[in-house]
Image (tube, rainbow over all chains, first blue to last red; front, top):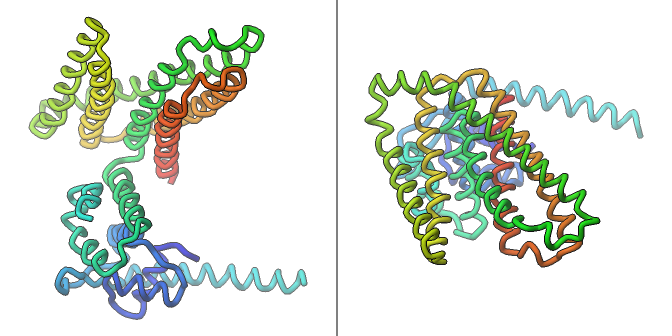
Length: 96
Length: 252
């Protein structure tokens, strides 16, 4: 649940954000404070895989947004996690 | 902070450096943040720019520094350990040496397999790109040879220190030159198996060296000083960790 790539994709699903806005948003919705190096390492990988793309830089701060492939990848990941949550919840209920 | 950014590859800095600096200016610059950026920079340099096989080659070089320190430190250990307790450290030491021989052989086989493609690449103009790293490595080797001659002539401590420093520098410079050359070539499937072999020998050596140290330390607690142990452990652990990362990427 604290995979930096997934957290970034989730954050960008509400609209484009630059690095600092991503850190604050991820901290707010997931309670995870990513290090700046970790954040930009994950941004590099996501951009290489075509899951996010940069927009025009605002001063030195460059916002990123989801691509169509990124939206599909996020939907796949969330569906997989949802299945795990459902199975885990069902098994836990049966065990108690 | 700009100095820490030098840990990142040049191309990465050109693309993301400004953004990362802007982010760092908006964040409290704690030691944790600095360490995070430094670690990410090294990871970027090792993980992005090189195929996993070449990361294992870098790992081998780092490990070799620890291995050389181990070799030097372990000299004459038989004199301080009672003969009745020789068996375990002897076996551990032999395992280290055997694994070192297998790992070295695997590295040499990898170089030999890449040699035909490398020579072809040189004929096709690679020399203009590789000239500087090869010259740097050659100069480091020449300086180191000079320091070795000085040590042999009058056993000078300063020359001995120069010899050690330039030996490590030359090792890393040749590794860098080899990696830059190999990055231009197609990676063979055999190189993946050789990388796996090298990484395995490093794990075996790490464990055997730990067993050797523990068994010798029981009889002669002061034989290996804390500084020597720290150097050996640091380079061997760093090398093994790098190799493990390379193998993980290789499997992925």
